[in-house]
Image 1 (cartoon, helix red, strand yellow):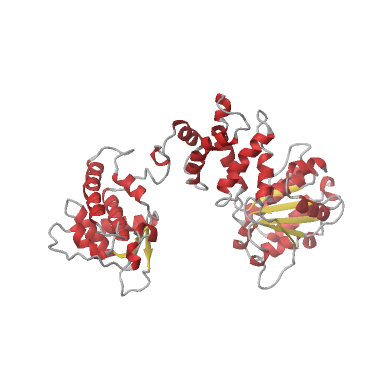
Image 2: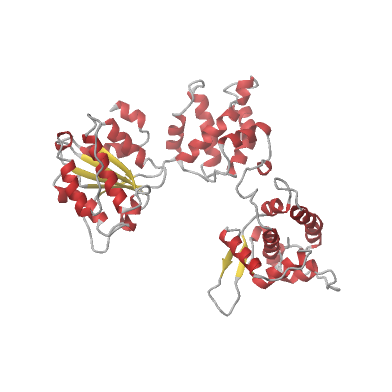
Length: 454
């Protein structure tokens, strides 16, 4: 079908296989078909488009939404019932608790003339969630055609392989169809097909080529790439709109879009900003970290002591323990300086990553950076646990009861600076005190630190 080929791109082999499996309307098809592939590989879109274009009776159910057996079975039966009563607009709600009731009610629903002489398709998206339900659900759906003696095909859509589904006791084997990832040529063709009507296809194809050249190594998700293409295209064609360049002046267009694509690289998959915020960021040429409300992490509100605990954890992760006396004691006495450094100490700790530190070292640094006297109360320990829950700290190796817990700081230097800054927060004594300490102490630690330290 030429119309279908224009709707489904780069999936000709899979479409041809499915059409062969479906056959004619009155033919018996496979009892079950298992379609798998990575996310955004076209499984759901191809299946839905094919069933709608061929006008085949089908029910599409998402197993994430129908998270219990009753919701799943009732959803299938009620949607089939609506297919029967589409002419008069009246349908009764069907209740179903077990799979035995589902088989009985399914026979009754499919007795209607509109469904009697053709194949009925039940599509279960996110089928991997079926493994968390009762043990008889998956084998039952695989043999639904045999149990009901009806012309029905169950299609499973999943991101994991069939071997992860197969029960130990064995089951009826479905027809397995694999959807491979899109190649860079496929992505180029699909994304170029979405070009705006006011611009030529070659102009938009050149933009997609630039976009894939930047993002293909880190992102091959079609949905995310399509989102990035729509988000950054107004900035790409800005010189053309202003009359500063023509559509063929690719070098000037690339120089205009390059810094904005680099900014977008920092938020791939995260979706920490909305489209309106991103447009504001591009319009004002603001630095990515300076946009208010940009990230859920840059404006996180923490309690008074949690901010100091997080700063202390960062210092403990990126400074050797032997430097604590030098940095955090006012009268540490004379310290013998040596130029002898081990090979691994000559590398910046920011490149090596955060190191583990014990709880007592964290508390010792905390006591030294807080002006007021801090008692090791349950409030302090509960705030440390909260930081672990927020994934700002990581608890490592607490299985050994003889050894105390060890932690690791997982946040960046920019995040610590945002926590210590009063920007975007209320100008309270807390923010002023943290910012004052940050401005006075951190430069001293950085300038006095040896190579390989913070």
